[in-house]
Length: 203
Image (cartoon, rainbow, N blue to C red):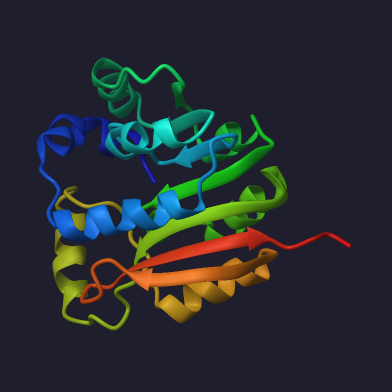
């Protein structure tokens, strides 16, 4: 992924309304089910911080990270929760600040060149029994989307995307050392695949 691409679109991204409010609120509800007031939480790929701001009040400390300086600038300008800290950093550097009780990534995993490496790093930074919560577009079955995405990429209007299947994503999460506790689709039609996973004991 290129930080320059996300810097360039940050203002438009911030101004864009949530496309499916019902699915977004359903995702937040399921995330909150797993959070506890004492938790130290990290969000990877936080964008302009709207989700971080909604969830920060449910935990002790919330760190929201993104490698786009413009995304973080906008996030810091509009989010004021006292326990919410924004960090401009790549995934490796952000995870280096652990251990965390929970790591989150929403609409990120399909954009990674090294999905398996990222999941391994997340596993390493979580404390015993720590949680990984994610929602990922898994559109491998939507073959008709590929030409449109490729066309936008050639014009510099879309990032590199992995066309994942839900089962493929779940396998990668399990192989990184997690047990899956919950899955769902929000929305189901796309699907945007929601996964809650727990770090397996290292015994």
